[in-house]
Image (cartoon, rainbow, N blue to C red):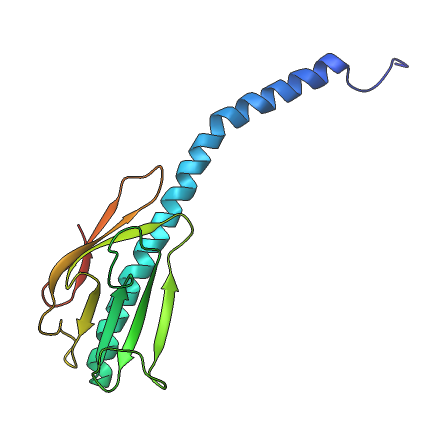
Length: 159
């Protein structure tokens, strides 16, 4: 009963080795899980923002523009903006509701829209003349890309 208490050096090394093996097995899965969650968050954010933009156009009887990129680049985008265009000049003026949105860390987007970088909803909540259907592709490392389609009337849905 009066023997020594505690762990030996060999027992501590064995516990450290087991923890190391478990971490080696689990870490790649956590990376994929984090990427999957970031992609899902970006997809839901983008769908929600485009649907809200369409609803605002319809409710306020104003044009709403969701713009992706800077008008030049249509790939590796990480931000987009939403403008309620009160005077129909297609640019942000003082006093017009404007917000810039950033995708979750590690997620990028490509735009295949016509015109190439924007969705413009008219006062009836439909895509304005000159806009047509297209797609937005979200991508993140360790996951297959997700494609969101935009119909001719401005509805956004998953493929």
